[in-house]
Length: 313
Image (cartoon, rainbow, N blue to C red; front, side, top):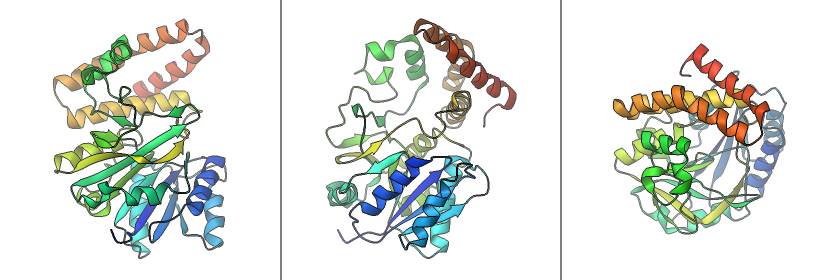
């Protein structure tokens, strides 16, 4: 295929040294064609946005966009694409890349050499992600209420190869390329024309489940979602909310409920509400106590306290 125009969008919120590693790996990676990165900073307080600013000043293909407030992931991504177009960069593909990832030297060239990008029916592509423990789970089935009930009763661990019991595809070794329902937002590449057609990420999602919603809408529009095992990148995982466990739990709960309210209204939505408020808090507390982590109960209480106070974010 002819060399594509690739836009890379990274949303930063207090990512610290991880952002520096991510940007350095991007600059060092071999490029398949014209490539530009936009870093959208969501009002970081750790000064990490200055890393992108310094790279831009050095002439690297990096642009810093200061959001002025914490827009969340979905709005931040949409802003990055819009600002790139205002600046005159017209991409063929848009890669959404978490700041806690590191590209390998051949990540992009291997991806753009893959057959999947020659198939116009494939709209979204993810790649193999690795962490310090090895290959990470980065593909998922579209979530159902049954998935989450299985998770908090332990059935998903007992039946890892049963799709009805799983949300994340733990039974898949991630060593072969294949169609999937959804790929992780840490490295999610989409055809720019499809992203435009779908209206970008749904800005109602602050963080979490926005990539699930995007992949679902792409599938409903007749496009395939593809996992490409021939290219890989390193991903720390946990995101930049890792240190704020109560806040992170709140964001996860509210986004999950928003997803089900939007895409699986009716009994599934009701079942997830019952699980989230009547079963899950007790299951989480019991798990923490059994693991000898009573100190973590504070974060659990904070997360549900925020949920009761603010509702769906």
